[in-house]
Length: 223
Image (tube, rainbow, N blue to C red; front, side, top):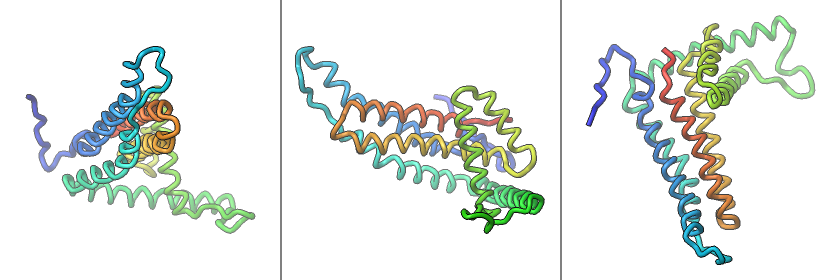
């Protein structure tokens, strides 16, 4: 058995160490999704070819959908407890980048003469726009990572070049985007489990790709 030594206190941990509990929880969910799909496909596979109705189990489909969000939330809190120094550093960095995004948004509004109360639909405030920008950046990186990780990594560096976003901030937002997609697919599987078990099983397997993407992003170190 091999072990990974703990990093010295003065050295930042690799992202796979920083997010180890989250990665483990995502891996557990992936296994649960495969097991849930197997409980549907397995009985169908062994049933006689001429059998019309096959009894399958869908409880696991519903269970993984219900337990997934809580499992990931607990894992995140455990990671935070394991790395309080990193949490403090990340919070400080997030305050700086948020302030930078707000300042940039306010400057752009001043140049273009825009305000939050102009027009029939109020525009987002600088603070709301700053939060939305991070979510949007994470979603775009997650989408590109699926097709070309190198291109997505280059996008992260491009997005963070101005100082309004940090690398870890964008990657963490991308993890959230991928994980949420997986959880939404599992929620759909739960709603269809009783009426259409085969579709529910397929959705469980579809969720795996999103959860695996979240693992890749949580493990990624661009340096």
